[in-house]
Image 1 (cartoon, rainbow, N blue to C red):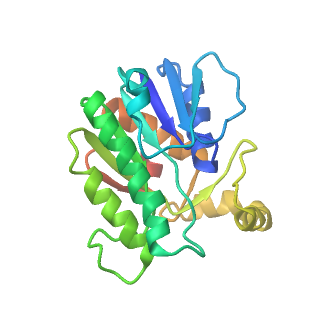
Image 2: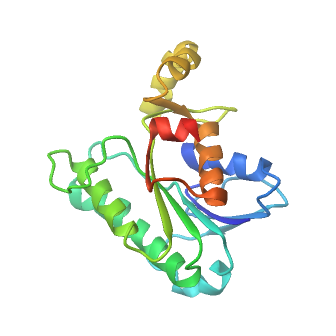
Length: 218
């Protein structure tokens, strides 16, 4: 299986990348993003670019892939809806429409979040934008799956880029294994998330929108 990964330098993407590199059935990984992963591995190639709204100049390099794991995202804290929508919706759809055109048989997995609003009409801004993004992805001509994790525990030395989240994880670190064991509906790990995404790419799933507990069960 050949995989394209967006957002590999972030906490979630880095966890997914680790699992891809460890999986013997993943032949190669192409990482696309603004920042390097700083990882050297025979399976891994990277394309660094500032423009994530248009991929027409690199289309030949994006053909022939079996799966795309889209882990790129930002926190909505302190952001206006237009700014958040441009990053969350516009970049995602730019990548997804390109993938659908070049690799219509591929599986596309989008990391959304618990509480996403598919009605696009609720009060919570980030949930509306994520809901709009999910709805648009599900209309594209490939197999798209929406992953909605809740709390994600970083493992294997992986850290969040967000200072507030790093502090939160540091304070809760002693309790994280217990939280993960006791509350599978609300807590997953970067390892579980990565393994579940790979499994869906290989085998599919019974539904297109997967909540936190579905991710852990996979």
